[in-house]
Image (cartoon, rainbow, N blue to C red; front, side):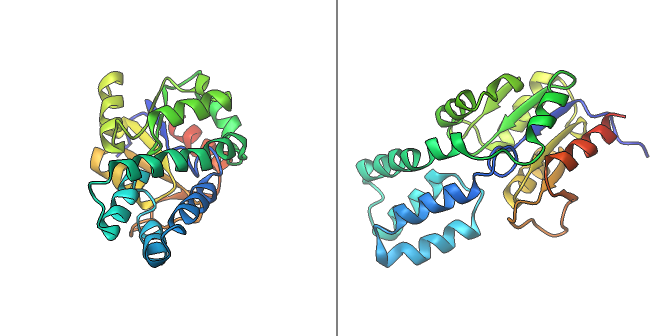
Length: 216
């Protein structure tokens, strides 16, 4: 049976548009090093839950510290993480083929971004990288969870779930696509996917070929 026509393309950001996963991991390692007794457990938690937001990881740290009500520490961790990562992500390399995919697809198909990066940081990085112009809209977390962002995109475009494709690089992205009912293509950035492993591509040059197949 022929699959429905592709009408919407949704991209994750870190590890899909820009090679920034290692930047984020290094920032977590720097922050967690302030708490030597918890550092190993927190890095393990990070690697086992790569797709969780920074805020969820900070909440886990506060629980380990017994400081769940420490709003000042929570705010400090968030601000410091942004300070450690923003400029580096602005300067980071594109995933191979990302500029070509954005330039080719944006004029032909509604193109959206859905990320676990906070909305304010996401918009700032995209503007600084001159990439915001390619996206019809961008959804960060907060305020959006990725599944809710996908559902909102489907609502705006008035399309069925199987008419949309999410390109992501992690099991979390894969689960978000499954929860929202959209198709999924993995970009192999080195992160794990759930079994059964989805179709994956090494970069966005190959992803563009897949999207072209779907469009044709």
